[in-house]
Every structure is written in structure tokens, then in C-alpha cells.
Length: 189
Image (cartoon, rainbow, N blue to C red; front, top):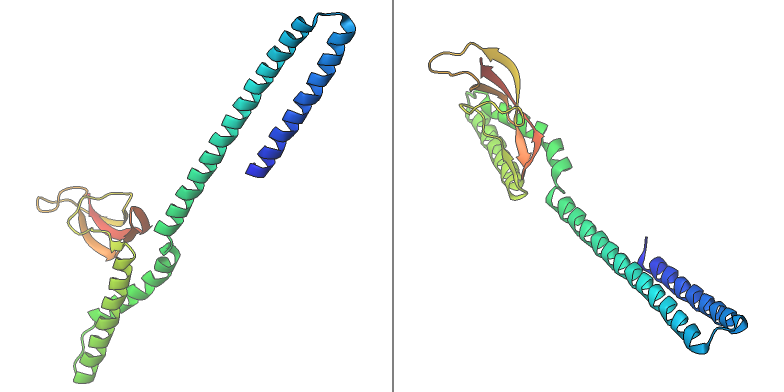
């Protein structure tokens, strides 16, 4: 409910109270009740109505403050995670650039091309880092289903204890505390 609407409701309530007070005054004049009793009755009515309006006013102020706080929190969340959709769309391109770098080249022209791809990849990674996007550490770490997606298991050994990540198949990324894409891994069981 907007501030102006609440203000209009409060003004309407005050007008209704004034109207009721006029009716009460007319009724006491006709009933033969003394002026002192009528004034006391009217004062008590006004006091009760004033307390009711004050309560409505305080509740309206609290609601407005809550709306402002909720709006501020929503804006902060939007700002914090604004680059999430773009990052999700760029991750496959980064994967492709990393695969291109993994290929062997035999001549100078291939090496130059590989160097260019490496520079593009590094600039993309730097841009992601500036936005708060980082790789999820995986190889040799303990498996965490919140961060990793196990696609295969291998038998555990003395060197590879159970629930340890053996190999990373696809890198995972997170934006601050939110996972954009889990790391696809092979886990020792």
C-alpha cells in the first residue's frame, strides 16, 4: 500500500471521527445529560479515537520502513549478481578456448595462433574475476555435492581416499557465493 493511499485513509478516518463526535454531541443534548458528563464522554471518545489513529499511523510508518528496507535489499542482490546470466553464456566459450590451448602445434604460425588464443582467454578470465566470478577448486579436494557434479567414480586407493576428486572433466564457476555451474568430476569411492 502506498504512502499517499495510507494518508488518504487516515484523513478519511479523522473526518469520520469528527462526524461521529458531532452526532454524539447532538444525542447528549437531546437526552438531558449534563454538559460536564457529555464533555467527559466526548473527551474519552476522542482520546480512544486518537489512540486508534496513532496506532494506525505507527503501523503505516513501520510498513513503509519495511518496504524501503526490502527494496534496498533487492537492489543490492540485483547489483551483486548482475553478471550471472552473461557469465553463464560465456562459460562454454571459455571451455572451447581452453580446449584450443590444449592442442599441440608444430609450426610457428600455429604457435602464434595459440598465443593469441591464450591472450584472449586470459583477458576473459580477468574480466570474470573483476566481476567476482571464480573457478571452483576441485582436483584433490573433498567432493562437495553443492559445488561438484560427479559423473564417474573410480575405486578408492591408499593414495586416493574415498570422496576425493580424482579428475576434473569440466571446470565449475561461482559468482560470490552462488554456483553458476558445478564442476564435473571423477570421484574416488
